[in-house]
Image (cartoon, rainbow, N blue to C red; front, side, top):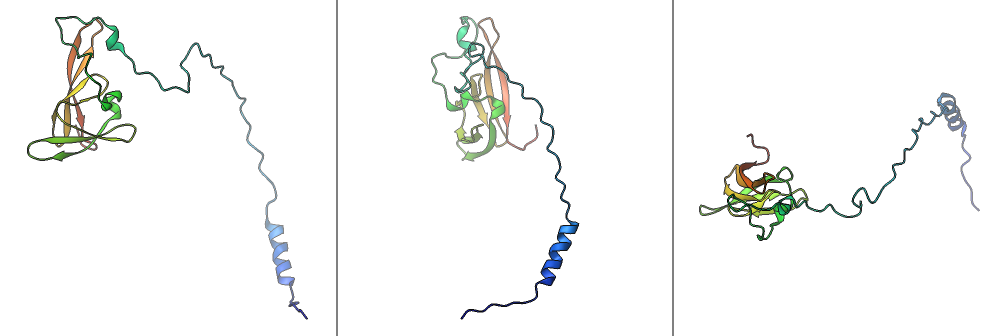
Length: 162
């Protein structure tokens, strides 16, 4: 035969009554929803949202003058040339007494190793010098008339002051 305890449950019933008496039963109303405003997508006015943006090719549109500096149009692009310098961060250096390499982190979280002669940035930035604190670049900026202006730019080590 099976038997069970038949203890007094009055203290549990009393606790339940106290909780019910002291519990707030009012539910806050839902906040007012703003009306949804639909914006129609016109495929002839913008690029498709499902394709990556195309790299601008302003420099290829200009007729290049012969008597002024210009980048080599036949040079093969390097991976860091698809990122603006604002999206590149110098994380450190490695090397020895003969050559120093800069470790550059791109916006897509990839890490690249560059030294003098490599290119980075959107404006044909050629690495001129790598130091423990910064990378010096010589960029070629189109002036709109077929000529290019050279500009020296510095990419500082992350966390270092100018």
